[in-house]
Image (cartoon, rainbow, N blue to C red):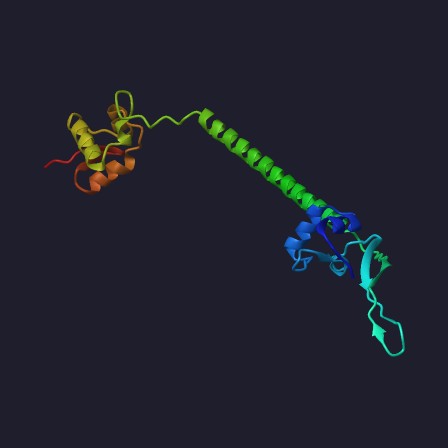
Length: 216
C-alpha cells in the first residue's frame, strides 16, 4: 500500500483535510512516524479511494558474464495501483447523525412548549379563582349586645336568673314565662328556665303557668 500526505489523502479520497484531521484525532486513522497515511488506513476508516500513482523502486541485477556478476543500476518502473471500495462516505454518516440529533432536539423543544402552555393555563385559572374570592362579599361579624338587641344571646345563666328574680320582685302577683320574656325584651322562651328555678327554690308557682319570687 502507498503512503500519502494529508493533502494527497484528501485529494485521493475526495474529502477535506479537516475531516481527515478529525479522524486522526478520533483514532479512526493512524499516521506513520513521518506523518504520512497509509492507503490501507484510509480503507479501514471507510473512505473511498480514487486512482493514485505510486512509484515503487525495483532493483534488477544483470549478469554480464557467466563468471562475473556486475551490479547494475536500479531501474525505476511505474506501478499503477487502482483501488476502489464501495464504502459509504463518512460525510453521509455524519449528516444522518446530525439529522437525528436535530429531530430529538425539536421534539424536546415541542414538549417544553407544551409544558409552558399548560403551566400558564394553570396560573391563569388560579388567578381567576383568587379574584373571585376577593370579589365575594365578606360575612359581617356578629353584632354585639346593645340597645334593641336581646341580651339573652350572650347573658350567662346566673345573670339571666337574677334578672328574672328582680323582675318578679316588682310583680308579687306573679308572671307567666311569656310575660317575663316580653318585659325583659328577650327572644328566648323562659318556660324551662323558670321551671328549673322553681325546682331550685328560687321561684314558686302561684297559679297555672304563673311564677313569683319564693318567700324567704
